[in-house]
Length: 250
Length: 201
Ligand SMILES: [Fe+3]
Image (cartoon, rainbow over all chains, first blue to last red; front, top):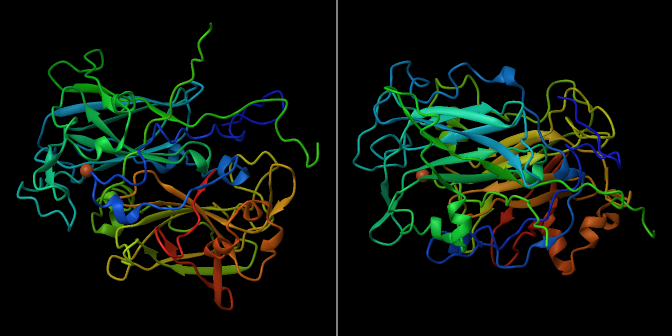
C-alpha cells in the first residue's frame, strides 16, 4: 500500500497519534479483578506525544495468511468443530473514522463448551478434538475483516468464588503504528454475564463497555448455515496539522 | 454547536492467561494451525549493525516472576530508519524491526536477539538515544504497558525522552545493563520498588 500524503507531508500512516483517553480504558489497578492488584504500575505514567517509534509499526502481508487461517471451524484438523456456527465480522477503523487496510487481526477463544486448548485450563468441559481456538486475518482495503468460528461457551474462573466469564472472543489488533497496538475482547449482545464480570467491569464507563458488545447481525447471517455478529475495532487516530513538528526553539 | 464526530478507541481488555493460544500457538504446543509463530526475529541474516542479545524477566509487585507475560518489541535499523512506513525512507531489508517474545513457561526468562538500533529523531529533530520499544501484556494487565529498552554505554544523557523523566533515579529502570560483549540484561518490574518507567506515548 502506498501511504497518502497530507498537507504537511506527514503520511496517513506515520503522523502523530491522538492521545489515549485513559479514563475510557480500564484503570491499571482494579481490585475487583484480583490479579491486577500486583501487576498494576503504581507510579504515574510518563506522558509524551508519540514519536516516530510509536508512529511507525510492523507491516504484514496478505501472502503470509493461509487460506483457512480465519476459519476456526476447520483450521485445526480440517474436520468441523462442534458448536453454534457464527461469522464475526467488522472493520478496523481509526478515531477519524477511516478504515485501516492491511492490518493484522488475531483472535483466540474457548470452544463451545467454554474450554481452552491450554495446558493450564483444567475446566471440566471437554476439549473438542477439532477445535484449536485461534485465527488470524488481514484487513481489506476498507478495513473490513471476518472470521468463521463457533460461539464460545461461558466459563468459570478463579477470582471471587463464583465468577464466570461471559461468552467472549479475545482480539489482538495492529494499526500502522506500534503505539496503536491493542488487545481487547468481544462480547455478545444479550449475555447476562457481561454485567457481572469483574474483567468487563475493569472498564469504568458503561458506554465504553457497550463498545465491546457485538450486536447480532442478521444481514450478514447465512440462512441454514450460520449467525453473524458485527464487531468494529477502533484504534487511535492520527493528527494532521501544518503546525506540528516545530523545530526546537520555534 | 457542531459536534466533534471522532470515534473512541476500543477500550482495552486484559490479554488473559491464554494469550499464547492466539499469538504463539506453536510455542504452546498447539501446532498445526500456522506453519510458524509470527515475530520469531526482528532481523534476518545479513542485517547491518552490531548483534546484541537482551535477557530479562517481568516481575510483579510481590516479587514474583511472571510466566505468562508476552512482550512485543519494535525498533529501527542500524541507521535509525524504521521498516515499513517511515516517511524518511527505506530501512535495511534484513530488518523487520518487530518481535514477539514470550517468557519461558518454567523460568519466566525472556530473550531478544537483535541488532543495536540507530538513533531516531524526536519531534524537534534532536536524536533520541538508541532504544527498543516494548509493549507488555499478561493476565492482570488491563491495558498493554509501553516502555523502552535503552543501553548502558550509549549516550543516554542527551536523549530528549529520558530527559523528560522527572524522578531522575528512575531513568536507570530503562537502561539495560551490559553483562558481556553485546549482551544486556533488562528486568521489567511492574510495581513497587524499582518499578520500571512506563510511558503514555
Ligand atoms: Fe478468555
